[in-house]
Length: 289
Image (tube, rainbow, N blue to C red; front, side, top):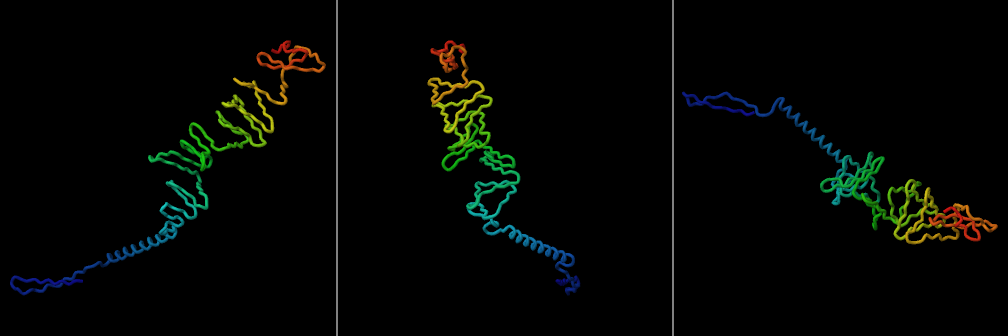
């Protein structure tokens, strides 16, 4: 408290007259003081709770000067030393590598989608692996090794660059259009079968078509005609025995031998038939042509 004394004078006398003392109180008292103490106490409690929560978050998240737990922040990027990482939202990264002693596993309860974007943020290629289907969209699809391209595909052609393309399905391979290959071969001890159920089957090569069976037969079956045509060369049947068991038998001619023998006759149209052999040819007497 501060005590102040004021001195006044009258008109008739120059002697100052004493003035009653006035006492003023400076400070916070009463309910204001109690509210101030309560507010300070509340601030101390809030600071203590925040400090405790900060310490708890640091302990739970394993935050340190190098990163967060097993997640280390280096000059090359972010490195996960051990454990698994889970992303709740899209992940944008330039490169993703696994550890040297383990493989890279990408797992999702729904699907995994990888997108490649250009500088305009347009998707140029994507790969989506779902529970029922794996789908990829890109102008070109290429699988390559360190030395050569193993498989490539675009909207014009599909190229298989391996030395051997093996089809192991029980129904074989179905091609809706043409196939170009230097060699078509079956697996050991299995048959090679080329079939066109409702259309024609054509094999073309500029320098010839070579068909060979090392330990079995070669069969060509047709519901209608089977044509062997050579535009400039010959059709050669080179074998120890050539058999035509289903040739028609001509009606003309009488064999002059006790043992029934036959001769093969050829019509001008190219038709072959059998005729009983005699001293002279009996083909002219037959009516098969």
